[in-house]
Image (tube, rainbow, N blue to C red):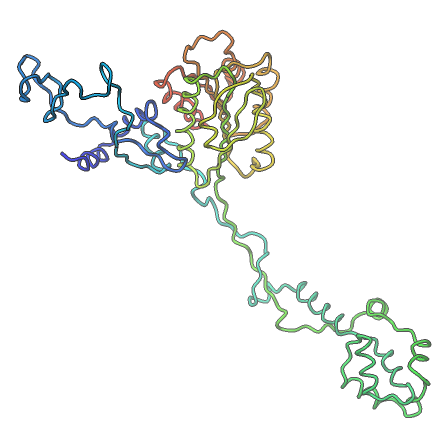
Length: 439
């Protein structure tokens, strides 16, 4: 049976795959995966192997010196085969393993089946399509939807652009020696929007004895007041608006798609001096599958990563899952950063929010009761969760998780889980996700 055959068999056996998925979450090398791709090593599969009769104390067909359990068909090690030294040293080059890849959506489906959950995907469908405000515009439509206000404004704007003081122009035509051509050039210099045809008609209508009323244009300008358009409209009103067909616009309603909200996940981890390697590993082993799971459930999942000791700061994903420890502890500092980020970038009306925190439950005096719990109550979220990672399980001053659990025991959007070893990780994930399911 070849490796490809084994892989195909593995993909077809759902129950075995789900069991191996849980095994991978607990013990697998999570670092082989990225934020958008889950890589599970095939070596987790229990491939078929030969079993020998333990009653037969003879060899296994390899010749003299072979021992039971030695690989078949390979020469036996001889003295001096290894590195210098008594027993040799283990090699430094890793073996090659095949992987099968999941996208986060497939991972979420598998984990749902593994945990017996059935959480509906969110942000993946249109809830409702409806007609919104009449904000969209087209050039044609029924007369009942004609945007008359827009048409009137267009016409009025054109009226103002074309308007001029007719009496003022007629007075210019009365300047001695001036004719239509001279008045037209003068009007252009004055930025008066009058046509040459209008001037010629007005000149023809003037009595002959009035065509020399003014000795010069300067005298006319000094004696005659020019009335601006706005003053004239207020005084006389508007008798005609020049509407044009190309100005017509018809309103129709915008189609509004209401979609389910997308998700932002705030991951908070304690990086204080008490967070030794085993504690850090348990944090990462819990947070990583939750990241993949929520990416699989939402069209648009965004993640905020916050690290804290006595102070807190935002980090990127790579740094979050590889950060080392040092400093004191003040958990509330992380919630202060989270509250600020959520308020500025992820309003509750538009985003599903998850706030996940993890650490060893060791916190500065009174910080949990006086600061953290009130802030958890003030930050709206689908789910708040705290995961205590205490390999010993009996640290005297590790009280944060217990205080949170006691305060929110009647709440349906706060989960607390305890992880003392990799075997607890799947149960912790179930505790968190089943709390979300119960909403």
